[in-house]
Image (cartoon, rainbow, N blue to C red; front, top):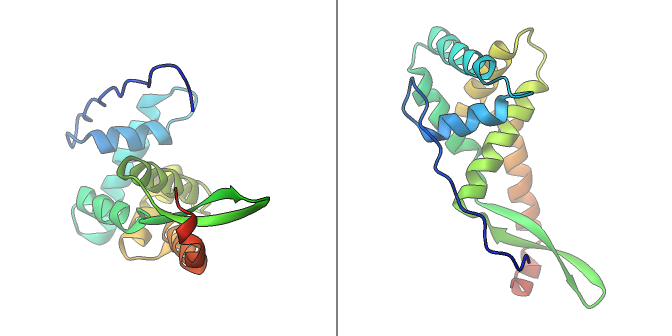
Length: 156
């Protein structure tokens, strides 16, 4: 643990289209090499594609997808008496959001569609239906936590 003072949490400015700071965080994670306008174009293009494909509001699909990807439990390693145990723990709300964003962006980048807009739209649509690689990642984390439930008494 650092002996210095803790880092200050700066609030994120809301995005121009939806007025959500969560969307700003998502675009920040989507961004490569500081190209924010490219990330915005990709995200908003994906929202338009989602609206075209599903005939639903793109932002509503995005929120549903993120809620389906957010993990509740995860395992963290803890060393006890020379052995390392995987201990299931609840995920803090900020980390829950960050993991959901990271898993969704990584899963979208790994898809086979041609443009990043199509990849992101496809992954968000799948995640909103409870399918896709990001949701599978969450389910794997939950399975690991469930299988290591016997070590929960080592929690600190």
